[in-house]
Every structure is written in C-alpha cells, then in structure tokens.
Length: 307
Image (cartoon, rainbow, N blue to C red):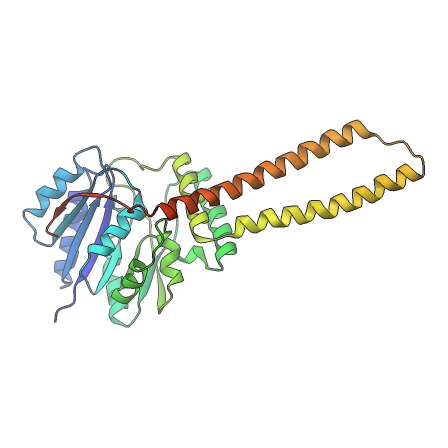
C-alpha cells in the first residue's frame, strides 16, 4: 500500500497565496515521488480564498477543501484538517509561503527513518518587528517554564505520524494549543531548522491585540501556572502582613507615632491591585471552563471539496 502525506494548510484571506503554494507543493512532491493530498481549510475568509481553492481542486484530485461558516481561528482550522486527513503522516504549513515547502521533503524523509514528530524550528525570525520578536521570546519562556516543555523547539510547521495525529484528535478539550500539544503527546521526536521566507503576497493577519489574545488563550488552555502565581502572591502578602502587624503592635505598645495616612493608602493600592489581578486570572480560567462545559463544536463546516 502506497504511503500518503497529508498537507494541511489553514487559510484566512489568502486569495493571492493558495494557488501559489499549491503549485509549489505539487511541483516539489512530484519531483520527489511523494504521494500527497493537500487539505486547504478556509477559516471564514472574506475574500476569494474559497473560490480559488475550488478552482485549483478541479484540475487536481489531490486538492481537498474545508470551508468554515465563519472565522473560528487557526487552531480549529488545524484540527479540522487533521481530522479529515487520510495520510500516513500529516504536515501543517502556513499558506503565505513563509514556511518553505522544500522542507516538507526533509521532514518526510525523517519520518521514513522512523521519527513520529518532526518539528520545524526557525533559524531566524525574518523581518519581524522588535516588539513582536521580544513578545514571542517572552511568551515562549513563560510557556516553557510553566509546561516544562521547551517551546523554543516547537512550531506550527511540523510533520506528525498518524498515531500522533490520532492521539491529538482523541483529546476532548475544545481550546487546544496545537504547537504544545504535539510535544505533549510524546513519541519519537526530532527537530529540523528552516529559514523564514518573505510573505508571497499580502500582509500578516495577526494584529498585536490578536497575538496577545492568542497567547492568553493558549496559556490558559495548557497550564495552570498563573493560578499558582495568585497563591504565591497571597503567601507573600500574608508574610508581609504578619511582619507589618508585629511592627505596628510594637509601635503601639511603645507609644511611638505612626505615619499612618501614607502607609494605609499605599497598602490599599498595593493590595487592591493584587486582588484585582488575582480575580482577573481566576476569571480567565473560569471563562475557559465555561467554554469547555458548553461543549460546543470547535468549528462549523459550510462546504467540503473532495471529502
């Protein structure tokens, strides 16, 4: 039985890129004799992304398409592609050609050598602005510390063996951090470096606020570390309260004057800020729990092509 490689491509408003990446991947796969299927997942695009997917699917039976009824997010698009894939191994690649399709062949060869998870690692971050680079480094350091998984050695650009794909699909949670989950499931893993390319067309769909929201959602979905920060802060202020209480009692019994007004105001501001921050963290987790117990679908499919 011939082996098949499923290539999953999430796309959101990428009308100018879907045909380019299709041609590039088709050329590379044919040149290297790799049987493949491409699964485009249109994540509620407002442009002609879906029309272009329909167009190229008419000339190539290896092209499949999934159209969401609205924008559900990249994680949902990746999961939908994995669920509908039929390959012995599955890779995930961005539609903007910043992930070099040539690396898919190297990943496939490593999979043939017996590796189950092949992680693509950025050798550099391309022409990203400094704020985004610094924010990314901070996010990965926090996630690595919280999850005990080296997030510097994970990415969305990867190849998974079928058993790893099936293990991820079987997980019940709705808000899933795919980048970390592929490391969490384990199996024999190797990394491969790649150079980030320039976008073929268009601009990144990620704004600063959407990246922050994405980071918060993924942290909450994968680790309870922020809740432990609340406990830590509470312990610190409990110790501080004991020390300050002893100091105040000492001053009271020795009839020494207290500079009360400034001290009280500062304490109220500090404690109030900590309490509000703690409530915010707890509220975020309660919101995540609320989303999970509603048990709504990760996504709603409007149309399929060749599936």
